[in-house]
Length: 265
Ligand SMILES: NC(=O)c1ccc[n+]([C@@H]2O[C@H](COP(=O)([O-])OP(=O)(O)OC[C@H]3O[C@@H](n4cnc5c(N)ncnc54)[C@H](OP(=O)(O)O)[C@@H]3O)[C@@H](O)[C@H]2O)c1
Image: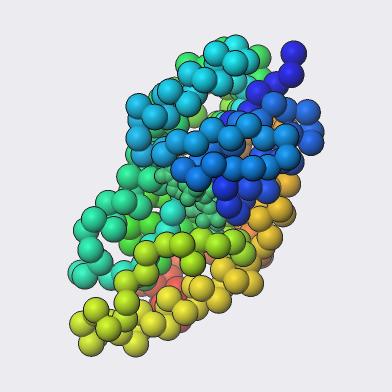
C-alpha cells in the first residue's frame, strides 16, 4: 500500500520543499495551503487551516480518495511584528488563529486517521521562538509556545498507539515569510519603541535572509519522520540558535534577557 502524506504550507518555503520530496520518496502527497499548489507529484488541496470546516472537508477528500493517512507534516504558519502595546489586536489574533488554532484544527481533523496507520507520524512545525520571548514578536512567540505545550500534551495522550508526534523548532530559514507577514510600520509606534523596533525588525529580516535553506529543513524533517521513535522536540538550526534553547533555560532570567536583548535591540 502506498503511504499517504499531508503537507501543509505547501505553497511556499519548507512545505513547498517537503511536499515534492515526499512524493519522490514514494508517498502519495496532498499539499495544503490557501493558494493552490502546482508541484510535481503533489495533489493540490486548497484550504485555510484556521477554518475547521474547510479543513475537515479537505481531509475527508484524502480519505475518500485513498482510504488512509499516514503522515502529516504541518508546516503552515505566519509571522508578524509589532510591540505588545501597539500591535493591532486583529493582527496578533490572526497569528494565533493560524499558528495555534490552525494546528489544533489539523490535529482534530487528522488524528482519527493517523491513529489507524501502522506507522503514523505527525510533525508540527513550531519555532525556536516557542522556547523564549523575542522582542516585538510576542504574538508569534506565544503562538509557537502554545503549540509546543499542546504537542507535549498530545504526545502523552497518544502513548501506546502507533502514532509518533514531535514538535519541530527551526531557527531562521531563508523563505518568503518576512515579505508576506504583517510588520507594523515604525512611524505608527511611540517614540520609545521606534529605534529598538527598527533594529530588531531589520535584524530579524537579515537573519531570515541568511538562514538555512527550506530544502535543508525539509530533508532534516524527512529524516526525523523516518525514525522509529520520535523525541518530544527537534531544534533545527545553526549552532548558536540550537544552543540558545539550552542557554535560555540555564541562565538566570535577567542575564538571559540581557544576552537576547543585545542580539535583537
Ligand atoms: N522562515 C523562518 O525563518 C522560520 C523560522 C522558524 C519557524 N518557522 C516556521 O516554519 C513554518 C514554515 O515557514 P516558512 O518560512 O516556510 O513560511 P512561508 O514561506 O511564509 O510559507 C508559509 C506557508 O503556510 C501557508 N499558510 C499560511 N497561513 C495559512 C492558512 N491560514 N491556511 C493554510 N496555509 C497557510 C502559506 O500558504 P498560503 O499563503 O497559500 O495559504 C505557505 O504555504 C511556519 O510554521 C513558520 O512559523 C519559520
